[in-house]
Image 1: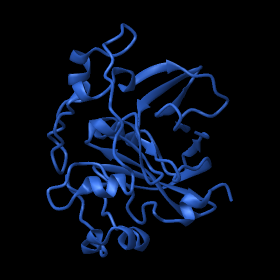
Image 2: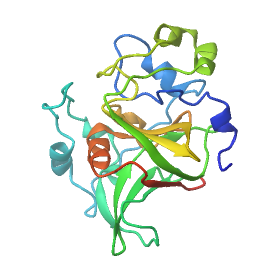
Image 3: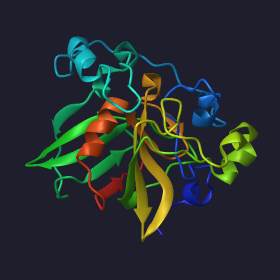
Length: 235
């Protein structure tokens, strides 16, 4: 098996995965950070010429009003510009469409072919919850139900109120879209999910899952069919 103890130890994500939007119903950050002390200070860099400008970012990461649950605009001032979506040179022998997660650099790449890739800024697993290897998208969902695993409920009893599932919506930890990662026909408990918390991008704060800003996740989701290959690089 390519998975390490982070999967077996479902501090991971159960039927759901890790948080996304800010919750009014529960302390969503408690689920997101678990036992972690919190986010490291986020040093925001100026807009370099090879990054999307803040004006461009405000358009790309603007509100998405036509969703089932309208998505608010991202406060792009809280995101380091190097994590804005970008087409980059990325040499790979993988087929177009393949997703490559680089947790060490906080990026997710979608291979486009001819040496190019779409690069998205991401949050990734914190220490003790990382894994690497190959998987594939076994299932995908829009505005999914989130069900915390029993191991999470044992650590964080307040999650028990959602033992039967939390309906989709802006307060749901999985957000607007989720790709469920499988190996050998089995769900790994890991996902690529959407978040509306810009402060998390560029940080290791999850129980092994990978989060993209909602607008980026909608873009990736729309171009990712079932069975898409996913490679998680070592951190």
